[in-house]
Amino acid sequence: MKQNAVITNEAQLGKFLKYWEACKLPEDGYYVEWEPKADRRTSDQNALLWVGAYRPIAEYLSEQSGKIITSEHVHAVAKDRFLDPVIVELNGKSKSYPGSTTKLKKKEFGDYLEQVWAWGGSMGVWFA
Image (cartoon, rainbow, N blue to C red; front, side, top):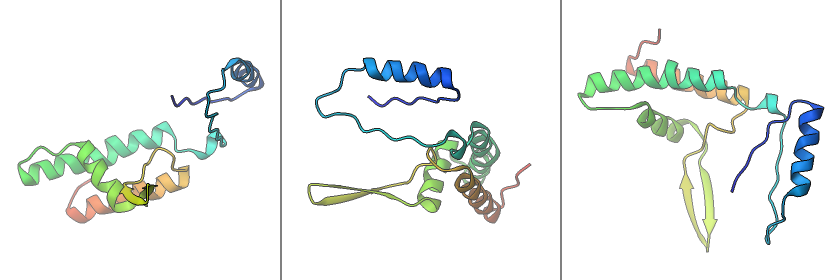
């Protein structure tokens, strides 16, 4: 089971370390990674992407096509267009999956958002 922790002060760090010490080590061990919190994209950036970019594009495409196009559809297409794929190799075979916006750094996310807006604008979408 994947778990995340956001630690912003010494007291939280102390609580986390006590929690970690009490955890039972699984047979295969743990995979642990950490990064400075400030580097990851913000909730406000993510909200702007979904409300200020994906939604207007979805509404425009729905109007133009007469079909229901959702923000989730736009998200899937945009990830495929603008993010590097994740390639997973297993048993000598590789499979490509669209990249994810979740772990983009603030600047990378800003660049991605600009690409989505430019793409929408090229189709005639008006962003308010």
